[in-house]
Structures are given as structure tokens and as C-alpha cells.
Amino acid sequence: MSDFLKLTYELIAKIIYNIVQCFAALFQLLFTGWAEYAMIFMTYFVHLNPLGKLLAILLALVLIAIPVLIVVLLVRHFILQIRLRADHEDNAVMYREIGRLNKQVLDLIDEKNKLLALKVNAMGGTERIPYMGASALVDDMLPTVGNVTGGSGQGAAQGVAGAVAGDVNVENVGEGKHLGIVTVDKSKAKEIDQNQSVRFPKLSLVDEKYKDYVKPAYNNEMTLQEFAEGYRLFAASQMHLYYTPEIVRRFVAGMAASKILILEGISGTGKTSLPYSFSRYLQNPATLVSVQPSFRDRTELLGYFNEFSKRFNETEFLRALYEAGYREDPSFIVLDEMNLARIEYYFAEMLSVLEMPSHDEWVLDLVPTKWPKDPVLLEDGKIHVSDTLWFVGTANNDDSTFTITDKVYDRAIPIELNERAAAFECEPHPACCISTVHLREMFAKAKEEHPISPETLDRMNKLDSYLQTRFKLAFGNRIIKQMYEFIPVYVACGGTELDGLDYIIARKVLKKFESLNVSFVRDEIKGLIEYLEKTFGKTRMEDSRAYLLRIQNLY
Image (cartoon, rainbow, N blue to C red):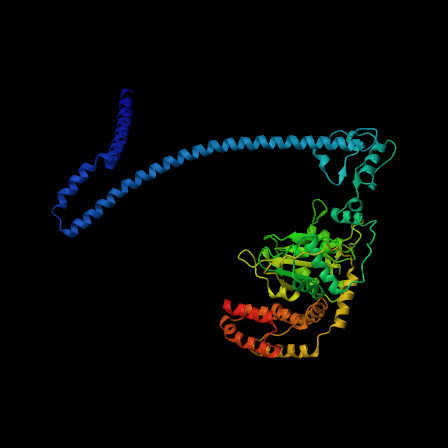
């Protein structure tokens, strides 16, 4: 036995000795052996040639890098272990918190189920339905007294079912028999929901407002010149806003030529005040819509149907659009700073609808189906754009806005306000009250009394040919149509035929020069100015010549 103990002792002692020697050798390798390494290095280094010295230095660097790398890896491993241990403790805390929150959620669900059971019990019947836990959340079925208690609560089951759906299917109903499940008819419930829901609360309020509406007494005797001059005097005397007769003529003539007017110019010249005060003059205040840079599509103006609340998210634009259907006098919607977003995005559908030749086609889809309590003027979920409505946009041209594209300019009448009119004194002038029908009759009468003269048409055709030959530009059909509507009304408001033609050419035709080749335009504009002076006279077409000179200076 003593021999075995000696054997065990010597073996274990040798193993421990070797382990200690291993660690001692590792310690000497990494830490205490550097003096011996340096002595060996210096002994041979002094006798080496230059190439040998260079190789010796590289060898020393490699040998130094190996233990340093080992130490770095060991330190990183140690730090990583510490972090993992800390993360494990944090995760344990987080898991405990999640468990606590889950328990709270389960408690809330349990409380909700109890409340639902109490609500069902309150719907009718003499016997109470006991609490059923999560089964009370089932949408299609409600527990009856019979299948919960095993009793025969026929009256309670029928009372609950009648209160919930109004139309039920009861299985195995009879005296002393076990009651089945009361099944709610989903289609019937949906129909009841539609009959009771008001999807358009704002538009329904408009219906209430005009339920007992009495039309005012319209003044259908005034002329266009009296109408335009009356507004100018009203704005000056009642609102202290001053506009030149030229601006007022362009605005009224623009109403005759298009449903969309764009007021451009520097800030402070009265772009927003003009349509607002004009609507006050007509005793039908305009609706002001501030365009936001985030506007991307039609829902920004018209709103959208919320499937969750079963209501339409109505906007002021939609309300004004709907209310215009009740009015016979002109209505205005002002899109303030309309080019803060891309007009051809959020206003695209309206641009297309207003191009339809028949007013019966001026229809916008809001919702796919009709509900019984929808507003009166909605037809199968569609809203009609009234002929009494005009859209007026204000626009600034700076770094914060988008360029108004030709698609928008072609459909609108642009009016520039670059300077404020001088103030003047006048007697107080009252507002007027005219119908849109009479306003259109005045427009039609102006076309009969002031048709474009053959001489002006001949000059216009010559200019058209010149522009097509030199610039590949032409008077499009839309511009020709607007010209025939604009010029007679402009003349009837006190202007001249050539001034009206000059304004349309400058704002609708020459505007397209901005998209042409820069050097080409610069070389040809001088010849175009000379052609205008030759065709129309040196003292005429001032707007066109001034616009061409401005374009030339820009280039």
C-alpha cells in the first residue's frame, strides 16, 4: 500500500511540476525573457551588414507583435466576458418587466370580459348570463342562458339576441329544452350600421344650414363695367384695399375665360386680399385653404374615408365645394401659396374634371357606395363641382416654391400683381348681389357686343405664323378659346381690344419662352420685338414687349 501511495505522489507531483514549469515558461516568454532576447539580438546585430540589420529589425518587430497580439486578444476576451455577464443581468431584468406587463395585460383583458358580460346581461331577460371569460369576445356568437347554465332561459336568450342584432337564428328553442347559440346576422348588422351612421358630419351641417334657406334678391340689371367698378369702389371704401382698374378688368375677364385664376407677384401686393374682398363684394365669403409642402394627392384637398371610424375625414375645401352646390351666386375657394407643393399632383383630378365640356361631367368620386344618411347633394357617393365655383390660387416665385408647369398655366388665367395701387378717396359703396346665371349672361352679352374684330384676328394669325416659323410655338386650341372669352369681357369692363390681346399673348404664349434654349431665345427676341412693333404699332403691345425684354435680360 505504501508503494501505491509513493506512485501516486510522484505522478501528481510531476504533473504539478510540469504545469508550473509551463506557466513559468509562458511568463518568461511574455514578460521576463525580454532581457535575454535583447542580449542575443545585440550580440549578433553589431556584426551584421546593413541588409542583415534590416532583416534583424523586421524579425524583432514580428517577434514582438506576436506576444502583444496574444495579450490584446486575452484582454478583449476578458472584457467581452464581463459585458456578456452584465447584458445577461440586464436581460433578466427586462424579461421580468415583460412578464409583469403581460400579467397586467391579462388582468385588463379579464376586466374587459367581465364588463362585456355585464353589458350583455343588461340587454334584456330576467336571468343573468354568468361571466364567460375570453369567449365573450367572439364577434359572431353570444352565449345564451341555456348553454351557459344548462337551464331553459328562452326569454333571456331571445331578449339578448333581439337587442344585439334585431335578426337572429335560434336553434332548439322550446319549453324545457336546452338553448343553442344565438347567431348574429352580419349583413343585417352592417345594414343597420349604415342606416344609423353619418359619414359626412360637416356636409350634413351644411344641409341643415340650407334647409330653410331663402334666396336673396339678386340685382340682375347692372352691366359688366358697373360690376367691375363697383367692386373697386367697395374694396376701397369698405375694406381699404386699392386696386387699379386694369387689375379688376383682368380678374373679371379671367373669370369669364377659366374656372382657375392664378395671382402671381411679390408679397404685399394684395394677391390673397383680391379674391377675399371680391367674395365679400358678392356677399359670399371665400374659403381660404393654405397649401402645405406635404400636399401630394387629392386626399389633401378632398379628404378620405376612415375605415376604422366609418367616417369621412372632411376638409374645408370639401365643405366649400359642397356648399357651392346650394348657392346661385358666385363662390370662391382660395388656394393660398398654391405652389408650395406640386399643383399637378394634389390638384390633378380637379384640372381634368374642369376640362370636361359638359358640366354634368364635373363629378368627383368620394366613396364607392351610397348610405341612407349621406348628404343630400351627394349622388351615389359622388360630389358635383358647381358651375358657380371659381378656384383662385396665389403664387410666389422664390426658392421655397415649385415652378408652375405649362399644364397648369394652360388651364388657368395668370394675373400679375407686382405693385400696389395708390390709395384714393371715394364715397362708401355697397356690396352687390348677383346670380351666376346673370354673370354668365353678361359674359355672353359682351361676346355679342364686343366680338374680336377681323383686323385683330388677322394680326393674331400673322403673329401665330411667325411664332410657329421661328420658335415652333403656336396658339393652342385652349388659348384660342380663352382669348375669345377673355377679350370681349375685358373690353366690356372698360379695356381695349388690343390691350386684352396683348395680355393674353404675354401671359399665355410668350410665357413658354422660359422653357426654350437660352442662346436661341436671346438671339431671336430682338427680331420678335421688331415684328410686334411692325404688326401692332410701336406704342401698342406694351405687356408683350416688356415681358420679352425681361426674358432677354435674364438670359
